[in-house]
Image (cartoon, rainbow, N blue to C red):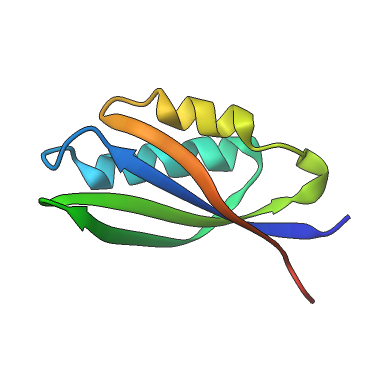
Length: 91
């Protein structure tokens, strides 16, 4: 099986939420799930709110990412977590 590159976008509850804490906790959950985070991208959304984007590699044999998405969405300060892109790794 091949690896897939997944982009997960996490929206915090408010602009005051500790984005670094969300990043660390989400990275830990992704690693426990079997993924390897390669890139973190914080993007402005609106009115001071910023999203956290995590790009990670996962073996496609793992199947759905729904389990890890749900765990991340349950973290304190997180409004939602959604996979926004999935691509098969080449090479």
